[in-house]
Length: 444
Image (cartoon, rainbow, N blue to C red; front, side):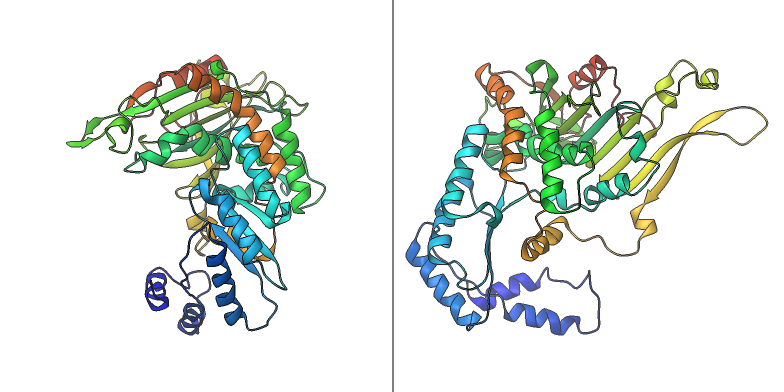
């Protein structure tokens, strides 16, 4: 590709949607003039030396920084880092590397990857990116909790009955099955995105907003968690189904997936944090593909009101009367709190109402994409939303034993139809811990 071809490609999606000032076109043109294309082999130091020469010409002796983004298959991470570090590091500024997941497949491969990267880079040069941490509502989690007096005192086992982290996609692997089949839904979504959000949600108040202070607290949460066992997990795999006259293929119908694959496309898990704040509170996660809706949300279900004066107004189902805080990460970003309220009129009829902060209605500004925020953070050296190596170790040590057991025992996933709410086993898992999934009710 020539520089001109690259610029045409970039210009198709380049916008000024975050900053709409008058000279936007001029700024875009300036930006495009600084886009260059250079091709070479990932494992060739000679090719990286050519890149270094080319970069040197454009930098023209200025203090210059270099950020390498590894959006490449994980088996060539180390080769690319070795060549970039030895042959194309910045001469007088910083050199940083952004690494995309997967960060290994288990504790051993993750530790080996970290060790290999650290042969050529310091920890503060490595930015392990998890784009879920760059999402607006996840970033707002700490603000909601630590700057609002009504939430922080309630954020513990005394008032919270359970916490749910729900991720669902309404499409299947659609030709990406080859990659997915090697990893599965637990490695793809749970062990990173959902566990990271859980750690942010459950951590103690950090000393400051400094990256190291926040990451220290997240590591403490992960290290306090019980290692997952097989009985705490339900696995599912979607099968073909026809809905509304449209036939949707099953997971193993994907040409890139082996016909006898047991890889789960759905998983639900119950996790526990053995510390004074969260002792005994079930943290439920579920993640799946080809479900009925696309969503990512955190649901906090509070305990029943003791000796509730209005019990008889709710009937026998007290779960319908508990408060619930819902943080919807995507789509239609929102935060809402379910409260009980009297229906206007002469009788005493109660219903559940939402105190609702819908972002689109409250804020006219467009929300930046998670990657935009994270790339800017990496350029500015802000590490708060990136994953430190000890965090990664702690996360893998939770999941590795059960992943190994699933693979060794060849556990068969429960099948569920494309476009459904997932396998029935997920409801039994929740019921075992006296929990009802919050996204099942009529007033989701």
